[in-house]
Amino acid sequence: MSEELVAFFKVLSDANRLKIIGLLAHQPYSVEELAALLGLKASTVSHHLSKLSKVGLVSAKAESYYNVYQLDQKALEEKSRSLFSQEKMTASVADVDVDAYDNKVVKDYVRKDGSLKTIPAQKKKLEAVLRHIVKAFKVGKRYSEKQVNEILSAYHEDTASLRRELVGAKLMQREGGGGEYWRDE
Image (tube, rainbow, N blue to C red; front, side):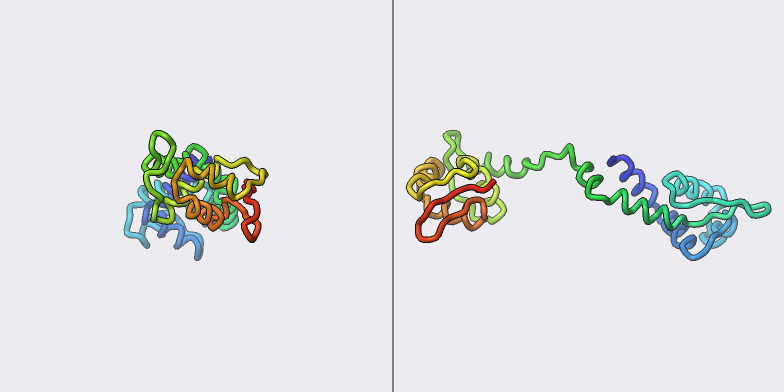
């Protein structure tokens, strides 16, 4: 899936090809006309048109002695829609470790015994540490504040700050007035 996306962008990564697309967006042209307009050799323009044709952006039709090229507007719109669909964009990052940042931050802030060296001051790093800590709580299980403090004390002595940050980051829910705490997901 991502190979198709890369191929599409490689074709569009050339300034002359973008100019050709721009010209063809207004009207069809022959290779010779495009070569004259762009100040290029006809063989160079043919090479660019071949690349654009391979990804389905231009098509040719014979008119007397010439092939006349035109931008395939429908193909461009369909290609854009299909290449940038949610499924294809998601598939393009399938081999990326989405937890890499969290793992690096946790490694930097957590001692071998699992406790925190310090509570991160930077928001993004704090969120990564909180996502690590919240895993100590079972989804859907309700905990008293005392139980939450007992679990959090394994991470840091400032359990009140950790509790407040977990709720603030919406990683845990809390009933008002010192009620129960729970993790939704």
